[in-house]
Image (tube, rainbow, N blue to C red; front, side):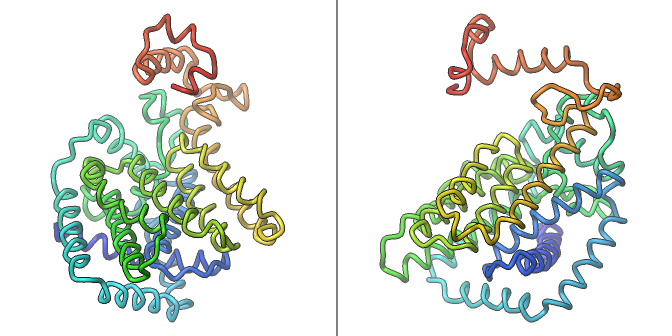
Length: 367
């Protein structure tokens, strides 16, 4: 437990530095440590993802990563120190009951991360995927060994960057780190709601996150992308609900980044991309100023998604099955993918083979 806590403290230092630097570049006025940490985790995923295209994510990456963080700390030292001071001030001002709840949750999260994981995906491909990234980066045609490797997630990329595999081989607890940050954010939102004595459904929604810890705890001892999407869903929707009537450019940028991060973590969250698109279309005159950088980041994320899929299995928009070039002779045979999805579809939709074949597109989407 102590080793996990130390690794989290060090990881927090890294992602906060990166988050502050990213926020400065994006010109977003965010001082909340948790949101800046999410910015940092997003940035870490992008940096490590493009690094993995050319080389392994190991101590070489971490040396460059640490050097970048030290530069950011020296450049933005005042802002970074101010972020920690603000968090400490807010935690000290918490009501006693909230302090007790937060302390108990933190202890339980660390204890759960120190326990043996029991999520089956951890043994089937999470650990192996991260190990491949640590030792080789993205390997051309890797999914031919096991189609599950095609599901290499942005969260696995971030985990490979922050598991310090060159020091100790069992730090795979980034999900616990993420959930702890989310609980800190939720408790602070509850405190704000308590102090304001006003009805704010957005703050209340975020404050409900600790109630779901009993369900989310099963994910935190493994690098599960699902947990990140659950956490981001709470943050995104509570933020929109709280600020919808007074949504400004900073809010739009923040929501967009969280949505992009959710997509690279788990591609099935692509539906969330309609959120920033809708906000932009309905507030075009206000948000067009920041559209260039957001578009650039969206393009960067989508490019990483395409490159990753093309290298790993030869299909850039997996699970859509087409190749970019006929020379991609390492692509997973279409028959294997077809067989995999035909069986998985029956399991996911809870239908027989005949029923699945008779369903139209709308029925499948509804399922």
